[in-house]
Length: 248
Image (cartoon, rainbow, N blue to C red; front, side):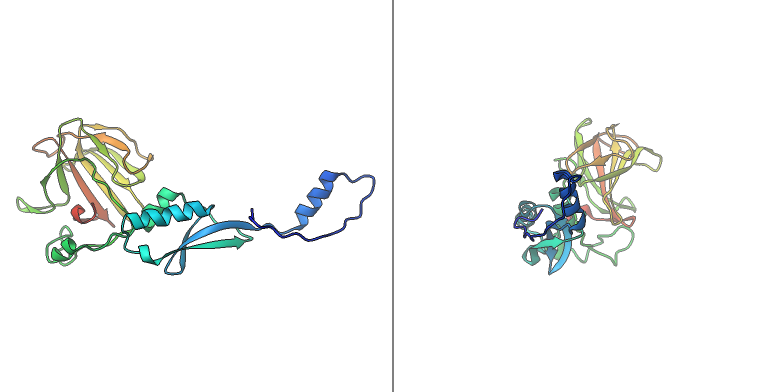
């Protein structure tokens, strides 16, 4: 609803059969409905829509706090249209609009193999902020290992430690993997982006579940081709594994 509506005087012919409800229906039925909402724009291009200014302001403030690469290009546009847009929640908006800056550490490592199986490709920016699946030390890094390519990071933690979803998305696999991952969870985050959580001892989600960042999805274990209790974590873009260290 418009915060400052305008009014137009009109007259209706009224007879004894017409009541106030009918008059209201005639007026509203012949008028044009306008929707007041807000667009969050990047460099002048409208990216998504929210119902209130407070929502839009919260999105921009959170992106600035995260030091998003596009923080200086964000703007709020007030909309007054006859067609209502589909609204986006604040959390989803922050996740979708966030752009991680290429830090000096990433620049220093651009010469390393950062994409599994192809040393000619390095860091690939994505508009998602990832959390660590567990707060634990890295016991094995991405890259060449034992004559093969290790496609993720291993976080060493005791069996039973909760594993958290690194970002929101839909669970597309939750079960036993015969390729060495043991009990495995795969979450799809849209735009070809997936995260893998391998060697779990217990799975706490099922295919089709929608999870938020930080939701517990499994427990750390030692299943599959594993030499100790840990979670193997991967980030894949269009089914190609990239070094998770550049995204966490």
